[in-house]
Length: 104
Image 1 (cartoon, rainbow, N blue to C red):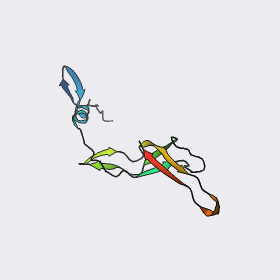
Image 2 (image 1 turned 45 degrees about the horizontal axis):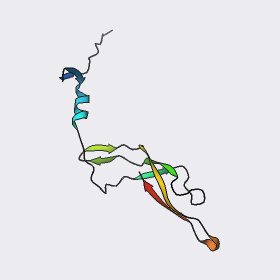
Image 3 (image 1 turned 90 degrees about the vertical axis):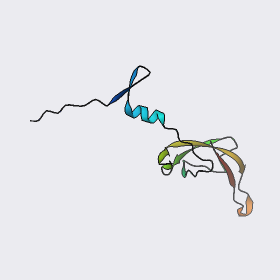
Image 4 (image 1 turned 60 degrees about the horizontal axis):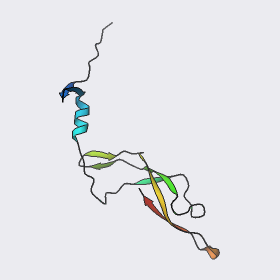
């Protein structure tokens, strides 16, 4: 039976502290997400003009990874929230209701 030795992650001294190299790389990376970058989302649960009022919140979940300059800035499945802006309730004669959704 072969014996295996486990190796510790490589570390690097920073300001007198020993920090794993992966943490150093993560801390050194800053990505600016341009305004207007599309983030596809799904609404989690039910959002209805008959039940919601302005100011109510609802949960959203990202539908796919969002990549900027080769970095994933929003992971698939990341949670977020939105807020109900305006509500127009459904009326008589088949008039459908509508909602304004704001994403925080």
